[in-house]
Length: 339
Image (cartoon, rainbow, N blue to C red; front, top):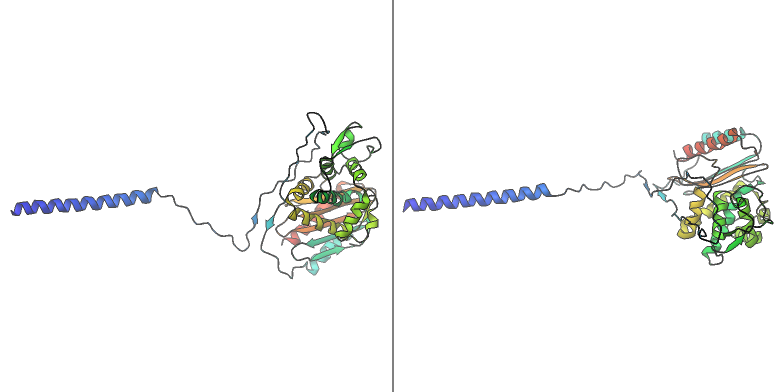
């Protein structure tokens, strides 16, 4: 009897041990096979959260694609505007007296007539140098004029697929790619806007102006804050101040921000334009102007703390020294603005 009890107890003990072993092994297997997902580290107070951007590197003129035939369509790449967010600036942000003197001295050393402007788009702080001085605008006005046309398109008052014909009356004077086509070639309004912004195409501007005259643009300019609209003239002979350029760039900034479709087009064309004068590690929404007594650039710098930058001069030769002057000024401002 005792022997049976002993055997029964031993079997019970072995069963308990086996059950415990199974439970242990099951738990271990479950732990070993579990995927561990580390907790995401929240951005620190100074970290940037930035959407990817497209680098503005391609300045090669495209083959001109006329309207009609199998090569009729031009593919327009529309990209959303770059949005860079950062910890907002202190409302008291301003250049120091030493930094202001540094910029004043640099600009005075460029020689000739010079005007400049910097505006922080977060705080509104503005640095100016001869900002009310008037210059020939050269091609700067193409940017706000194309803004005007894209605003009309957004309002349903301009058909970007409308066809315009390149004629001998338009002529081939000035920069651009349209003049490489034979007279009689047709282009859409959308194509011509792209060429005017990417390649500062003069024939494209003249064709657009024939369909959408300067007086309409003058009225539009008044609505965004331009006071001396008479200085716009026929667009090709506009006069401009650094303050005017800043008003235009503010309007361009707002349109890009508020209109994903047409603002995306404007952003794409102006970040991939030729004859880059300013230098920056950040994307630039830019337009240059270069003609007799005019060597300029105005830009929206898409830095963590975005700003508008304008430099107008009466230099006209476009020497290596002139380009270096623009690079040095823009890099100096960038170092100060993002310190």
